[in-house]
Image (cartoon, rainbow, N blue to C red; front, side):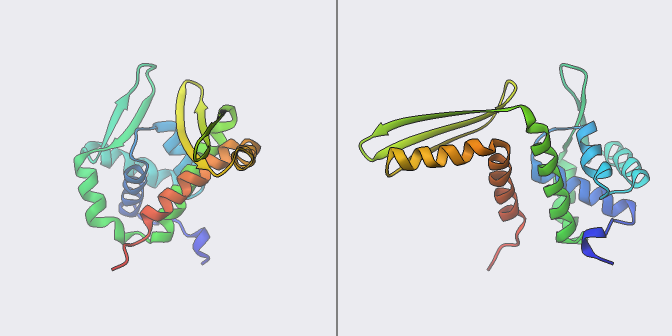
Length: 185
């Protein structure tokens, strides 16, 4: 079976996979978003997903959070952090990476309405490019780059302007990929 087609075939693997995702995202994720990432993407079976979520909530491995708008989200509890630390290696690294990249892809698709702000300011060492990417009222990223010249800053800004959500996704993807790679001794 092709690795890209592999799906976890037991509830325990699904629980580990969901906890690894929540651990790596390190934020509350909406219940609908989590479902879309895990089930609609084809990574996790619907029945295993529901059973895993139920078990994880019952054992306080994950915590259910309701925001001001009444939307339910999930975050990893203390037990969940220990669970990931002790059992993450029981699920293939390629599968753990796959679900995280699916989460990034999902987020990038949701960034259709992302807005980009670029500011250039000349300074004695060159030109400073200030880049800000927001999605609605949420500021997703602020980045300051010092370039050798204004021309170089404008070229970088133009490249970012071509596809701000891809730029954001690439930075997050790189960061997560490095975090998932095993430490080299």
